[in-house]
Structures are given as structure tokens and as C-alpha cells.
Length: 275
Image (cartoon, rainbow, N blue to C red; front, side, top):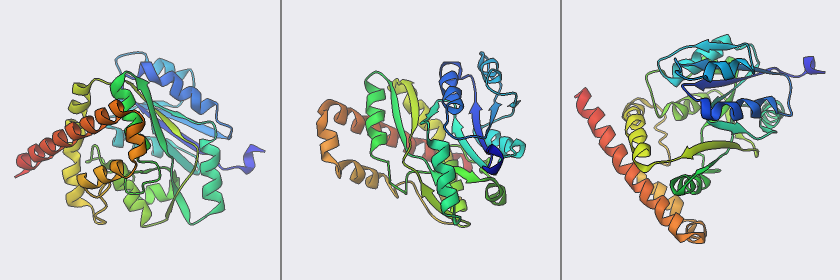
């Protein structure tokens, strides 16, 4: 029966992800859809990441320096008709692959699929992040595709390896020029762990360096949510969500304001370094 169904290559990029990897790979092994080819590309992990990966698949490789290069390398190794690309702190709902294949099969003009995401984790800031992500479901200017026809992926050149932080939107933009972009109902669950505000802001500073380049190079001018003000419009357009747990709502708005400020400083630093 499997030989009549398209092979899907599920790609996971890793870098010292021992705490979350087992749950990630287990969620792939529990998909209702078959056949699946699992490919893990590691970036010089210093823990047991590769050992865990090899208990699930023989297709474990080393590649760096960043996740875009890892992803492109993995697609070169893939043999599936479709590729699904996720991070090692993500867990797939059991119907994710099945729904993606169904969407791509029913609508041949849609060969890039968005999978909605929800966050979970420990502590106050993780709950704030969970609330934040809930606002983005169904917002096309923020969500990005993760499931692709492998031939079309290769035709676009894959992820821009010069970008770090905006590469998902960039690829979705370029894919949308070749095919329609659809979405499914099943979720990816993003394990945020225990978020520390300082660490979150440090991460934001690092990744926002790539946003300036993305905005300068994007030929479609598609920016996530358009502007910072539009993010606040999205949040404030659902006051019930914010007021359901007022402390959490205030915490989320405070965290996002700090992230936007940090992101602006990061982009300013990047602009100065290139001037």
C-alpha cells in the first residue's frame, strides 16, 4: 500500500538539543501517515544529540554553520517527493504529515503548506510566549510554510544561507511565486522550555541581525505583520484573550515590547556594521 503513496522526507536540524530531541523524533515516528524518511542534520553537538537521533534513523549527518545550510544539505540527501522541515524543539501532531500530503494532493496548485504552531513550556514567560503565538494562527503575514514539494524547493534554491532569523519568510515568499501556499488544521507544538527574559532578548538580538538584510533584499517586500504597530493591532484586536488572564496579558505585551526594542537595536547595529 505504501508504494502508492508519496514518500515524505521529514528533516530535523539539531545543535545540542538532548532535552527536546527525543520527544520531537518520537512525534515523527507516531505519524498516522506512511511512508516517512527521517533525516537529522546536526551542527557539532556537544551532548548526546546524535546518539538519540541514531536510535530513530540511520540518516544522521553533520553540517553547519547555521540551520539554513543544514536544511538545504538535508534536502539534497532527501529522496521524498515532499519535504517537511522542523526544528528539534518541535513536536508534530499525529495527523500533520497526513494532512499536508492530502492538501498537496487535492490541490496540485498548492505545493507549500503552512502548519499552525502552538507553544508550551514551564514558567511565567513560557506562558506569555504561548499566549503570543496563539494570536498568529491564521495570520498569513506571520506564518511561514514548512512542507514543500521537493522539486519546487530545489527550484527556488532553498533557504537563503546568508539569512538568519528571517529565512522562513524569505523562502515562503519565493515559493509563493511558483505555487500556491495552503495550510492545514493539525498543529506543531513548540517546546519553549523554561524561558528566561534575558536569554530571550539575547536570542532576539542575534536573530534580528538578519532581518535588515531580508528587508533590503526581499523582492516581494513581504514583512512579518508589516510593522511593529501591526503586531500590536493583532494583539489588541483580541482583547478577550488578553483579559482572560490579565497578568499574563500584561507580561506578554511587556515581553514583546522588550523584544521589539532589542530587535531595533540589533538591526541598527547591523546597519552600522555594513555602512
